[in-house]
Image 1 (cartoon, rainbow, N blue to C red):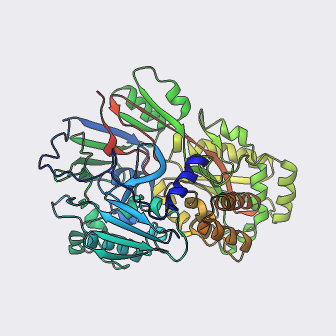
Image 2: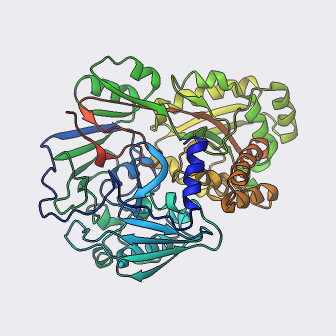
Length: 531
């Protein structure tokens, strides 16, 4: 999102009586009984991607592949069309907001139904929201903790916040805030607190209102979607089956595509797609995910090296131009924790400074011990192979006097120590939860990623204040400046070392509608056989 687009989205939120009305591509209801007439061409669509998949339960999902496969099954109140993330459009509802951006009223479309034919009502919205809010163990729970919801009538709900919350319209597009069939979920263990036990049921059955529904679900191999025969929105399924396969190596994805074994590859590098000929359709552009290092600031986790000086030593020891060579065409150096496409991103990144790195290393107390760098080795974000990147980091740190052993592992085993805050030195990635710069405030102290790094507001009270300013600002210039100040402060003393923003390069054959979205990667519901 460019700064101008971000400003336009904010300005719309401040319009006071904004109503998002139905437009082309939105999920408005159809009254005709044969609304599924154009559904399913009879073809199978095969998509290869490196899985980051943990659950079929929208309320517990917080990883990219999960969003990709859940987005066409479950609908949200608002959504985005194609690659335009400048402002949300109606999904299941239209929206009005007050002048203070503290009260958001959603009116559901009449006649929309779930996959069992039952109507979608305000009770379903409230239950789905309160269920996520009550599941404190969910990684997506933080999205809604500052928001309250109430039922106005059978077709209307109102969300309120104590402070201005310009990010709320973008937040409700996240698949974690999908509207579920409340009656069915409650019949199968669903509650609005941490006693909820519906995940196992949702891993095998989908209870949404989207154009597709779940046929099979395997966390390690593939997910198969089939048309929802009860769907009565305006974007019916265009394939009889959609098979999303776990193919962790970008080179294998390229081979499968060339050999006709797949129709769409999602994790190719810019260099790989450049090798493809005219028989393939290429969708390429800047991504929204940042690959970064974290240095845990909890001395119970990282001992004497849990200090900003060691993070500074690592930050200035690296040759970012050399790292960028591994990412291929279209990638960029991360200029901070906010990617270049978002409001408040810094113009320039850190440059290698071995003198500064050496001074910081001496201050840190490092005495030559060998450290362990943990990272997932089956997640080639934008075609960037984490093992190859880690090997180059290892070499550069060795030249600066920092000894590192590499400890690659599958995503499934590495995600828990990262989330639980027990990883002392790790490489990971972060993508926005919604198309707003506030989606990167979790890097602040006492925020989600900050907590995972053992970083507290007591450690950095001034940065904690910057988080609050950016989160609640309503003046457009003040909001942009607050985000920029936040990003700059983290470059100076935060526990994170932003490395790369990979390009997102997709390649396909005979598939229309392939566009990039920063949250669900691609919109399967928008895909159709090429004319």
